[in-house]
Image (tube, rainbow, N blue to C red; front, side, top):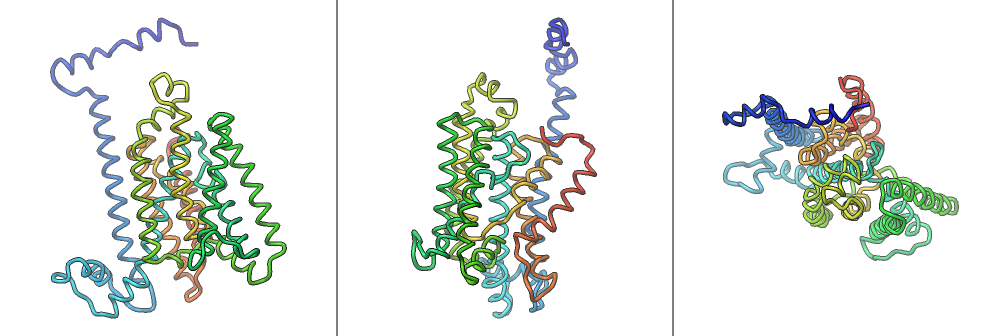
Amino acid sequence: MTSFRTLFYRAKPDASLSRARRAGKKSNPEVAHERFKLIRIVFVLGIFGLLVLLTGVIITLGPLNISVSDSYSALLSRFWPDYFSVDALTSRVVWNIRFPRILGGIMAGFGLGICGCVMQAVLKNPLASPFTLGITAGAQFGISIAAVIGFSILGGPFFIIGNAFFCALLCSLFIIGLAAIKGATSENLVLAGIAVNYFFTAMSSLLKYFASDEQLRLMTNWGMGDLAAFSWTNSQLLLIIFIICIPLLMTKCWDLNIMTAGDETAKSIGVNAEMTRIFIMVVSSLLVATIVCFMGTIAFVGLVAPHMARMVIGGDHRFLIPASGVLGALVLMSADAVGMNLIAPTIIPTGIMTSIVGVPFFMYLMMKGKRKEFWT
């Protein structure tokens, strides 16, 4: 057991550190910290550059032959037509068919990656994901109600999407409210999420039992997750939610860093862990519910992307949150591209491909990593 004398002498400032400060120079720990900070920045910028490069490459995949240079020219010609130009057919294919699906993958992967990162932090659970609070189960129940019973909160083109959104959000808010009454600890949130998740899954299964073949096909296809339903109209609504939610989550970076040391430590420093936990869960639920209602269940991305980023850059959420978002976008884009071209013209649903492509890659990183424990 560590003695008081040992703790006392450990608390003393290092002599080399004091001399370095008096000389106006940075000590070795400070130099190492600055170097690791630079590595984090370079990593985030590097994967963002890879995302831009991969966008141009994926656009070229399809029946119409388009080069990588033409794909970038088609994208840039909308903004700088005097400097970039392509033929009308290529421009229409890129902007109306291929790029909207890629943009949907980027936005969905980015949002799921960020939400998975902050949920793992506030729940202190490495298995937490955007669907821990039963968001998927609630959305699936809303889809089942619209398909089998024919009831929807919204009409027209939002007949099914409206039900998925409101039921997913209602499910999350119910869990958060239940945990807040009992105490918004990470354990209460996880237990409440598991309970409500099983309940809504059972209700969806009950409606599936009475569904016709056509209704069952609709519910099954939505549950697999697909980016085909994403359009420019959907992107505007999703962009609004992104602009609102992501900056709010980024403002809690320092609080998340402190909360990793425990709720009591955070409270002693002045961070209200329970209120921070509820705030992050509400914002994350709004973002995930919006993604799920348009694109269905896309699992694994929100679970694996934060771990991939954490293996490389550690647990500083100032860099971990954006890195998780970009890696989530890369995973989802790659999985969707493979699903579209693996057995073309048949398209494998995106939700299936994220697990098929992502799991082996994640296992490879875990086995290759030198650290024995990635969750810190």
